[in-house]
Image (cartoon, rainbow, N blue to C red):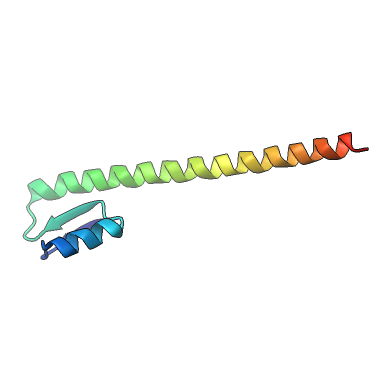
Length: 78
C-alpha cells in the first residue's frame, strides 16, 4: 500500500510502518517521486503474491506427505 499524506510527523510515519505501508509520500507529491514509489509498491505486491502462492503450495505438499505417512502407518499396522 502506498500512502500519500500531508503529515510528516514521526508518529504518523511509525504508525504507517506498523500498518505495512510500502511507500509514504508527503504532499505535495511530484511526478518524480510518485512514479518510483508506485513502481516499487507494485513490485512489492507482486513479490507478496508470489510468496503467498509458495506458502500455499508448501502447505499442500505437507498435507499430502502427512496423508502418505498415515497410509503407510496403517498399512504396516495390518
